[in-house]
Amino acid sequence: MTRETETLIRRLAEKHTLQEAEFEALVDGYTPEAAALLAAEARKARAAVYGDEVYLRGLIEISNICKNDCLYCGIRRSNARCVRYRLTPAEILQCAHEGYRLGFRTFVLQGGEDAYYTDGVLCPLIRSVKADHPDCAVTLSLGERSRGSYARLREAGADRYLLRHETADEAHYRLLHPPEMSFENRMACLRTLRALGYQVGCGFMVGSPGQTSRMIARDLCFIADFRPEMCGIGPFIPHHETPFRAEPAGSVALTCYLLSILRLIDPTLLLPATTALGTLHPGGRELGLLAGANVVMPNLSPVSVRARYELYDNKICTGEESAQCHACLEARIASVGLRAAVSRGDVRRSPAEGREAAP
Ligand code: SAM
Ligand code: FES
Image (cartoon, rainbow, N blue to C red; front, side):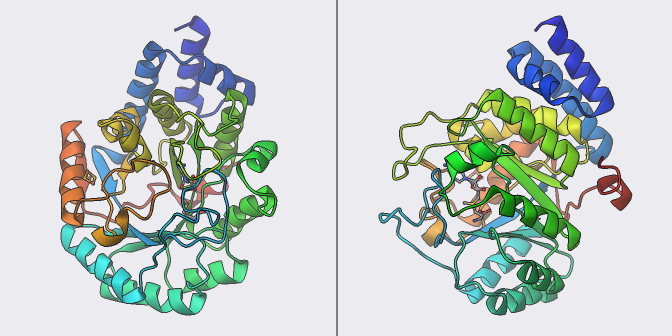
């Protein structure tokens, strides 16, 4: 590790932000030694806010039908080989009941942009989940919708929304998406979600085709500025039925390095150790936790559909029952000296800290 990298790490730990060029230098300064120092600082910052608690989110993959054609994604509409499915509201409720029994207090409803899930379908569903489990949070991850729709879903009781920005660099966004998708709209959706009072999650893939350290630095500046409550980052993994089939996967080590940087940018962030990290490395989620993550998202989808929600190749947990995933992750969390909390796991930040503090 160079003296410059060490100085940047110490400054980030103290001031919680850097200039874009400094973030770029920090990313380029990756060495195992620098990663170890960053991770140690990140664990300290996490412990100061969250102690040893890790939050579990029950992930329900409600549909793999999608109108979009993102070039990296295995469930893109052009993938004619993808066997499509959608869960009914009754099936989704059933998953939530099972999840509650297992100890989940947050349910994440994630899926492709499937026109079946109108507000008329989703609002009663969200109300039912909240009525049956008033001590639980409902997180949605259903892509881009209108302001009116986001408002109705919020009104029905949705607490949080995950919408990765994918990249904060507009030209890079165009490389990853078809022409009909817009960087501006993606960013506008994030601002709308925030204005409507959701706890908001953005995020990006590490090692997506065309990504440079300058672009990662932009992502980090965007996150430092936007101050989301949650941030999902995971390595890009190619899917064999997409235009990016021959592209290399992202790096586990760089993903962990960036998790540590994000923890230092905002010690209060809810930061998952993702399934993609666990897919590229058998101990990937443990490495993510050791780097500063504090959330894991075990799969709660019915086993019959799991393999079909195939965003990338070799996704893990497609054969396991929900109870197995829950137990597996509890053990993994314990193995790195942390504790799976039975809790909604809301962000520990005063509203003023999150919103007004942003420059
Ligand atoms: N449709 C919703 C949306 O657009 O936000 C939610 C589902 S989308 C499939 C969830 C996330 O999966 C995307 O934001 C993307 O970052 C990630 N993803 C998609 N394809 C991937 C791949 N090949 N490797 C790693 N992550 C991928
Ligand atoms: Fe699903 Fe480990 S989290 S089996």
